Image (cartoon, rainbow, N blue to C red; front, side):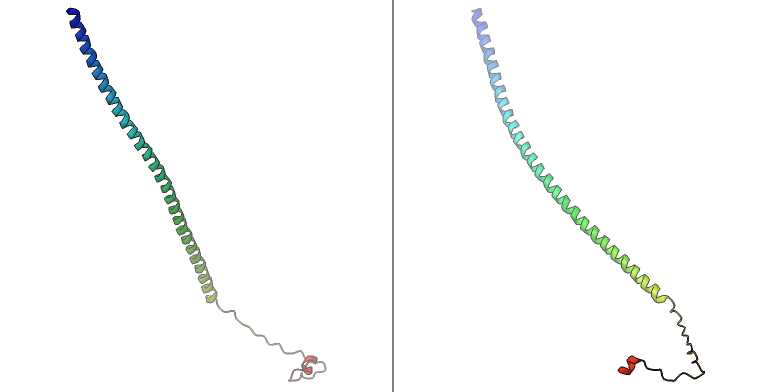
Length: 131
């Protein structure tokens, strides 16, 4: 009977090992399911991250365009104000300068040959007489 007792013990141990193997296999299947769920979630997150990256690039470009427009408007306004200031200053300087002195010189007509006085009325030329 000794061999039968050893055989029964081996059979029990084999059943325990078989049971442990079944449990390990069930756990491995559960882990595989969880890993596939995690993998699908990771793929979804990756896709959402790509969409987010694209949308942030678009928003950043729009922001840069808006800032560029405001910068150009500010530069244009500054240039306009500078030109206006230059115009006002030059006009003020031009108006503040003293008026040039007007000197009128009257030159008497040269004496006529023979010592006669020139006529008091101007002589009319050919054109004026035709009119």
